[in-house]
Image (cartoon, rainbow, N blue to C red; front, top):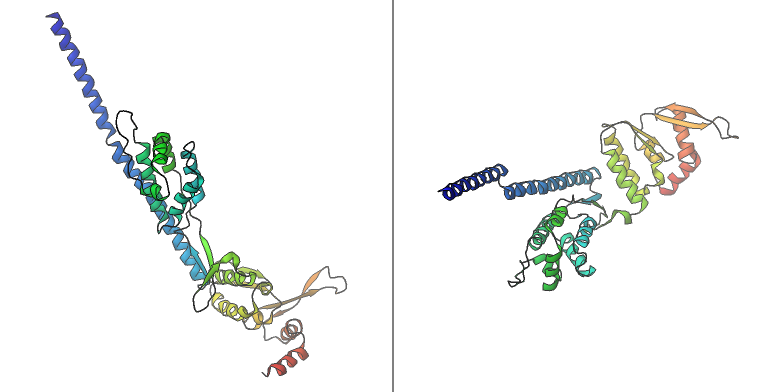
Length: 318
């Protein structure tokens, strides 16, 4: 009888313990579902970042009058991912060429972020795969890894080395996107070249268009003719007309086209106080372009003098 009572007491203890554990499990909810939801929010954060950068790139292209093209979506910072993969495969003897092929599969895909997401799922399946001596090895399908040249032995070694915590560290690594900029050559084929390969004049013209098409505080530009192609001066002066309605523009220039064709409201002519010393300056004249003194200064400084101006006029037949 005593033994029966002891068994009943023990049964009650076990039952209470089980009920306690059930209660605690219920309080935890569904960890896998919670993790999946949070993981999707993590990807949504990156998708939103891409959308924001894409919108900024589109706006930048518009401000440049279509001269500058920007690409964001495909420009994932692959070096961060490459480092993560190298660290995860450390000791697996998976060579660098195969890791490069994995990275190339990401960068050349239509949506690098989604490809990275798929690759992470493949790595997770390997990290969670339990290799046992008492059952045949049947590794999960990993298309990206297989297409990159990882054979069965490579993938088995990765499964042995990868731990869930390593995979989680990879998954939570924030991914950056670096915009690439291109210069539109304007030819019939609508060709583009990397912006860094455009001439200094082409770059300056494009960036000046961006500045002139923005609203904001007064804009001061110092001798833009030093960098701008002469053929682009007329396009810039047209931008100046439109820009004057959005912000105040202040140019320092020796180029008559910017002053005259740009229809300057106020022209300030500066000179040295003493031409022999050239140490201190002064405002010599200021006023509208219709002012006789201002016109004379423009003719003298910017056109090389009246005689030179008339001579060019006769030569060009204007």
